[in-house]
Length: 92
Image 1: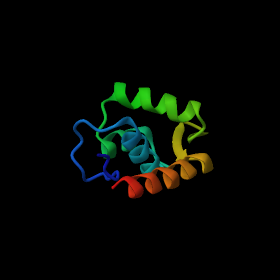
Image 2: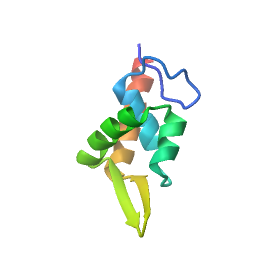
Image 3: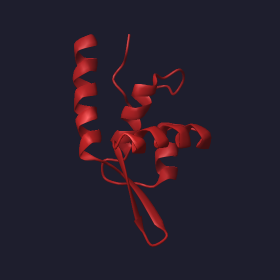
Image 4: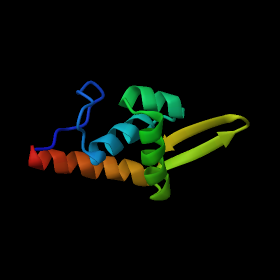
């Protein structure tokens, strides 16, 4: 049974969609890669893997200003979060 994503949940054996949800939730206001890694509890290898998927599918936008790289949940990513939360409510 799936559980609604939350940064306070145990970080063990999470489904990839829960990790996607946690990452997108973390990036709603825009944040750096290290903050997502810390708050979601991922290794740098895991972060890179999931970031690649989220950016490839247009769920996460990358903004580069000078030397600062910021990640922000795209409108498509916000739609994913709404749909995912609805699905979790129906299953739980």
